[in-house]
Amino acid sequence: MRVVVTGAGGQTGSLVVQQLLERGVDTTAVVRTEGSKQKLAEQLGAQAAKLKIVLADVTDSKTLGTAFAGMDAAVVVTSAMPRLLKSSLLGVILAKVFTLGYVSRKPSFYFDEGQSPEIVDWMGQRDQIDAAKTAGLKHVVLVSSMAGTKPDHFLNTQMDNIVLWKRKAECYLVASGLPYTIIHPGGLLPHFGDRNPAPGGRRQLYVGIDDSLMDDGQNHSSIPRGDVAAVCVASLFEPLAQGRSFDLGAGPEGEPYSLNLKDLLEPLQGANAHYTKEQAEFKGGKKVRTCPCGEQ
Image (cartoon, rainbow, N blue to C red; front, side, top):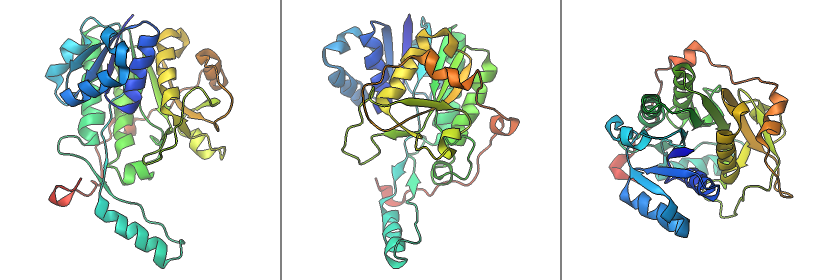
């Protein structure tokens, strides 16, 4: 099997690459910059010698053809990257202090020019799906996110509808005719700013559809990145994972957990995420605040 991984320079994408190499899979990693290429090679160490790293930009469809040519499958782990608007933190602190914690306020975020969710998570993923179809790939594993059925969720209201754009790309993949597996992980661990490690393979995994794991009160809506990577890789080797779209979460850290994807999916009894015409035709809404003065 020859597998191309896009978004391979990210935290989750690099783990997908690492686990594929550990299985001896012929892997091509797609990154956007020379810096990401060097960082990935350093992270993989001796394993990097077995990896082909290609520079391509998912916002430029002309660069994708070479990366997908000759591949059997793709794991798409690309995503727009929100940046914290540091000046908004003052409002968060003041709201907490002056209301004794009774009122909370969310910080604001922005995206770099040309890297918005519409461009990266919708157009960029659409172009990757087209490239996969042109190259005749036999399977596309797409990593999306929970909150695709929740327009009022923080990820959408404060981050330029990022998950709604992802959901639109999912609809495009489903309609493409390509064999697919769509995974909606919950909050990725470790969370931003958390220095405590969250190793994979140490938590019971759970699946659901249409954000049910966010609403069941069981606190299963977060998951280590290593476990997401493991499910991506397992999906490539499990025929029953094709044509599936599901949410993925985890319980508290505990004893080692051995992943069996077939058993993990069994409780869904074949149910998949429900896609609507409204999601497929999403055109955006209120934009996030842009960053003044080039603040990073």
